[in-house]
Image (cartoon, rainbow, N blue to C red; front, side, top):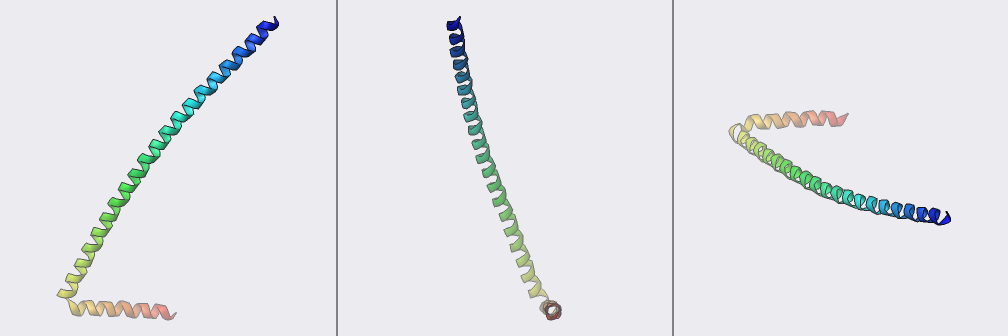
Length: 95
């Protein structure tokens, strides 16, 4: 009777150790999956950032070129516009 209880306790302990080992293996697999997902997401965000930078840079170059063309085509109008904007900023800065 005592031997049966001891044997049952040993079996239960071994079963618990087996479940613990299985749980550790499962956790390690989940961690590996999470690391892979984080790496993939980091690469995706980096690619999006690079694409956005290229778009913004292209738009800035286009706007600069348009402004240069406008100054060449209408220098007096451009000068009057700049003077007006500077005057308004000057009034606002006084307050």
